[in-house]
Each structure stands twice: as C-alpha cells, then as structure tokens.
Image (cartoon, rainbow, N blue to C red):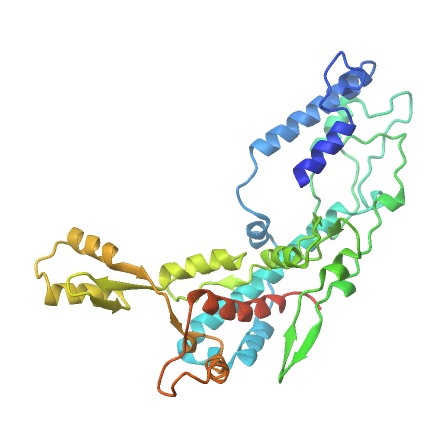
Length: 376
C-alpha cells in the first residue's frame, strides 16, 4: 500500500516522465540548473542511505537507544499479582522474562513517540540559519546549503530537549509553510485502552479501530506512530499486537525474544514441544532426548556411535499433538473450566487440548501483559 501511494505521488509530480516530455521534472527545471543540481544531490544521498540501511528494525533500535531505563518494580508487582502461579521459585525465571518484555515494550513505545515528536516539530521550533540571504536567490548558495546539510555552521542553535533527527533539506526562503501542515493533536486520551470488568478481575482491551481511525481512510497508529490504512477490526488488532510483540518463549533454555504474531511464536514453541518415538519397539513419547537415548543404549544397541544416535533421534523426533491444560504457566482454572464445559471427561482422566488451542489460551494471557505496557 505504501509503495503504491508513493508511485501515485511521484507520478503526479512527473518524476517518472523523461525528456522531451513537458511533464517531466527535467523539463520543468530546465531554467533552474542550481535547483536541479541540488535535487540530484539529494537523490544521490537518498540512494546511498537506502543502500546502507541497517537490518535492525525499529524495535531493536529502541532497545539500543539512550532512553532512561524504566523502573521494573511496578511491572514485577503486576505480573505476580495478576498471575500468582508465577510467584513461585520454579517459575521465577519466566516471571523475570515477562517483566523484561514489558520493560522493552515501554521503551519501544517511548522511542516511537519521541521519534514522531521530533519529526512533527513546527518550523519555529527548529534551528534556522541566521544569515540566509533574501536577495535574488530563492535558495541558499551552494556552499551555504552544504553547510546547512552537514551542520558545519557557526550560527548558534537553541537548546532542545529532543535530539535532532537528521534530514537533508532544501529550505526555500520565499515559501511559507502553513501551520496546519505541522500542527497535530498529541493527546493520547482517546487511545488509552478501556478496562472491561470480566468476572472478578479487570481485563485490558485494545482501542477499537473506529476510535483510532475516527472514520478516516488513513490514520496514525497510536503505538508505532506511522500512517496506516486499515479497514477491518481484525487487521487492526493484528497490526497493533505486532507493534507490542506480546509473545515470549515459555522454555527456560531460550533467550529472551519477543514475537510479533501468534503464528511466529507458535512455530517457535512447537520446536520445543517434541517427543521421541522408538521405531524398534514401537513405543515412545519420550519427553526428553536424554531419556530416548538412554532407552536406545540400554534396550537396543549398546555400541551406538554418536552419529548413529543422532540419526535415530532425528528419525524418532515428533511434534506433540496434545498438551495438558495444566501446563499453562499462568493459570490452573482453565483445566477446571474445561471440565465443566465437557462433563463426559472422567474425573481421573487428564484434560488435554490441541497445540493451537493451548497457544491461543496462553497467548491471551501474554496479550494482557503486553497491553499493560501501553500508557493509560
């Protein structure tokens, strides 16, 4: 969508037209050689910037920024209060991981907000050169322009609480910019998520698409502060949660990583949720690789080489097809609710669900924690 909008905009400017077409930019600038030269230089700079873009995304950039660290004490209390199961010693590592994830989300949201504020500053707030000529030139002289672009000028700049966002700009002194082009409502009130009472605990919700877009075709996302064109509620939820990256791995041996979608996270989790099946005796469901390898050495082949052992392990590796409801690290009442909804389950039997059902349930808990990072 953004690419198509750019093509329409550039097409309206005649950027894709070539000489001798009178609609081409070259034709319209045929008597303005200096401006044409500056445009060519700016395009060259833009090309170099695009060729050397960092592979890191904005979320990673926010973690590397110099923002003051957030105090995690409040988040620690919230995680343990909302999910008492995480207050135990055996789950302390997961609680710590979830708290760090909330802190990273806060840092990203602050980074996105600050970046947007830098770009939306009004012209009067930005540093202006003191010696711009208002004579016959409608633009600074070539040497002066290079000074402006590189910042090598002796003019004093006013202090600002926001660091400068560097951009190559051609300032034309005979053009006045409308204040309406720069003034935007910075209020976050309408974007704060509502709290819906459900049972005995409060539930955080995303703002609805209609509240964010105000019926407009395009709108500014209150999380990443980029312009979006979203028409469906489901698409909005998908975008918003991709900004918040709600999902983290629930296995201790994994490094902290935040996943933007339920699918990405589920695929990652499924790599951990595996069992091993023995093809020699047609028995299996060994929960760990160590147990499976011990079984092979004791009951089948004593002198297996490491390569043979690895090959048998790979052949016997299977993704689990059912998960106990009690494995949810956040709650145990899900198992009770499933029993109530399925009275045919015998009291002695365990309640199991499919992996997608399990991921949906655990993912809902994680989305609640992700929404806690959003300023209210």
